[in-house]
Amino acid sequence: MKRMILSAVLFLVVFIGTYLIVCFLIPGMRLKLDAEPREYFIACITHMVGFKAAVSAVAALVVGALPWIFRKKV
Image (cartoon, rainbow, N blue to C red; front, side, top):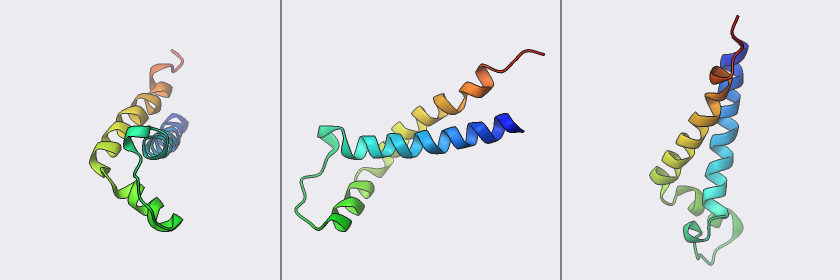
């Protein structure tokens, strides 16, 4: 049960982190929008949501599977 919770937490943290990295740190994915911060943040998150979610899900699945891969053999 601990392994499942750890995997879920890792998946969630990596998914959110990767999504935000793709939104704001990759120059090709950044929006050139002259707007107030709240509007810019929402626009960045909703722009190309399918692609960003797919990239984030793959990264999160890889990291979320690590507890299952490196489990102790009893």
